[in-house]
Image (cartoon, rainbow, N blue to C red; front, side, top):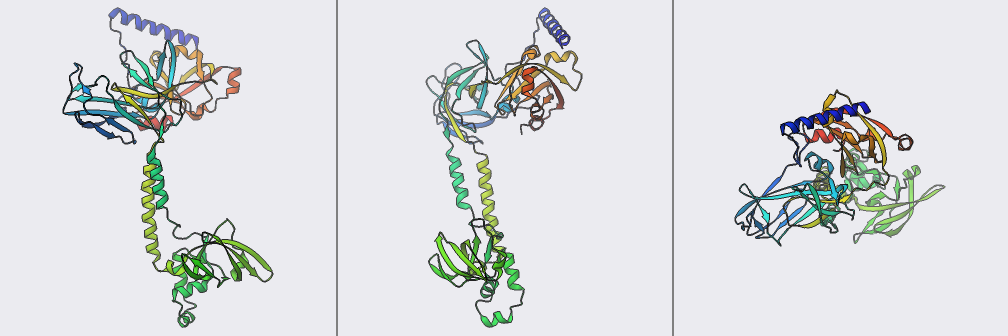
Amino acid sequence: MKSRKRILLLTAMSVLFLNSCSDKIVEKPFISPPFAGINIDYTEFVVHAEKGDTLLFNSGSRIIIPPDIWIDSANNKISGEINIKYREFKNASDIFLSGIPLAYDSAGVKETLVTAGMFEIRAFKDSTELFIDKNKSLTVQLASNVTDTDYNFYYLDENNKNWVYKGTEQATANPKIQEIEDSIRFLQPKRAFPFDKSYFALNYDAVLDIYFKDNDNVIWKNRKSKLPKRKAEKYGLSWSGINCWQYLKYHGSSYEAYQMVWQMVGGKKLPRWAKDCYADKLTHIGNNIYNMHLTAKDKKTSIRIKAIMPLKHLFAYSAEKWQQDYDEIMEKIKIEEERLAMQFAVYRTFEVTTPGLHNWDRVLKLPSRIMVKGDFKFDKEMNENLASVDIYYFIEDNKSFVKISFSSTDSLMLVPDSTAKFVAVLSNNEAAFFSSAEYNKIDFNQLKANPAYTFNMKTKKINSKDDFLSLVGLN
């Protein structure tokens, strides 16, 4: 390991020496996406500068632009239509793929930021970049799923290559979530269709009565007909053998118990002997729920049941009509649930006075870290190219990453984080991974006694954002 690092160091020094002699030192841009053609896209809006506007982003974020805030580099007021470019970075992988650093120099102390959401906003008049006039601002309400209270607002000073602390403000709950949840609650059908096994009629005679409209002669002639049974089964309706003629009130009308569709509640099941028994008594508890007392020869029990609807109301519509109505309701609920899934828990609001990159962050604190000697082994020959490889340590459930150089792997920080993983950028379309699954095999108790670990990196091609997220286990 030491000899390899010595060779790498000599190689790196040689490259620097040759570059200095030719006066052609090549340095990566401060913001440099690691993979070719993979970045977070902008959404573009057209705004009338004198009127301002309120813009809605797909995530639910809101951008409030007052009128007459834009100037050019010569402080000239801008009028007419302007182009707003906006994009969001939900997590560390979005930030990483865009080549944006999370390193932070706080008065000479090197820190790493943990993000609760980042955004970039820029404005242009034709091809001219615009700025916000002094003492004016626009408002960004950034949608975020990070609800913790210890996050502050930072602006990326791209000239000085550092994040600048701008202030803080508490997050506010997203009111859209409650609105959609209320909508789903209102849409919920009172019962599933067809009925499950908890729904039943008291006996088959009730089914015959409703089907043949209480015509005793017709019922007697058709007692063996399978049509009533088949119809009831289309609704998912079963029946017991309970006889009960006690009257009850349902939505202001009187019905005999056997005329109702019932549902078992409280988790108790009908006993087998209830196929031929009597209900001595119905005791009303409330909300259409009753205790039914059953007797058969020497057996007694009570069950808790709920009156769902009169049987005649169920049979008034075909099973196909009930199913269609139920399916339509469930489709509406599905749409609302999809809307709910897209919502973020809170809004983080701040007044923006300078276009560019802005981030809600806190400083990374890792009290349980262990310093180890790390060895990274690749499944392909790296040779001298290893000196230029950047390795990134993703932690905090994809809310942060630390950039690691090979010169510091003898003193590598590790934390017992089940979401941690390593990504090494090998070229503009290739990376090597040490997955969370592999990381979770590390025995940290053993590591404290012997602080050294070898990371076996697996190489993969990266052709898209989905490729990267899938391979690193972040999708």
